[in-house]
Image (cartoon, rainbow, N blue to C red; front, side, top):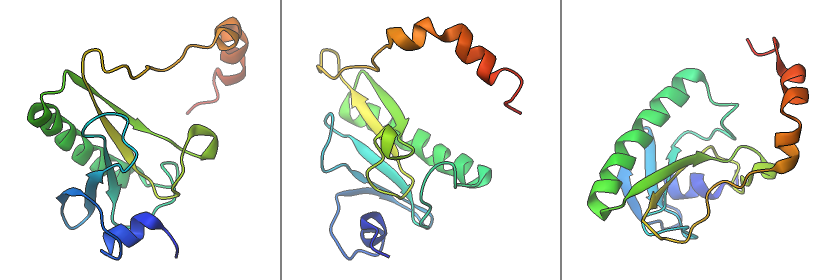
Length: 135
């Protein structure tokens, strides 16, 4: 397997690791959005969030929550974003499930999610497509 995150787990390539236990690894993103931008991955290779079992996802986000709060405190951040990109269209570059913890600082210049006027104009149409189908 040629997964860069699996290579980091195996210590085949270096990373700035800030947390590790038997199941998860957290390291600083090499292309950070802000100071302290961290990725949290399971050591077991799972391609994406949808392929992760509910139990695995729950354990994963518990570790993310633990690290995010500590990062905010240590780095004196004013807040943080927690995000996951699932699929190439959503910005997932590495096919190994990973959560981003992005510490936020007042006036850091990082943009928040952009709003879509097109999506807003189609709210009712979208509701009709989805309504009753999510179980």
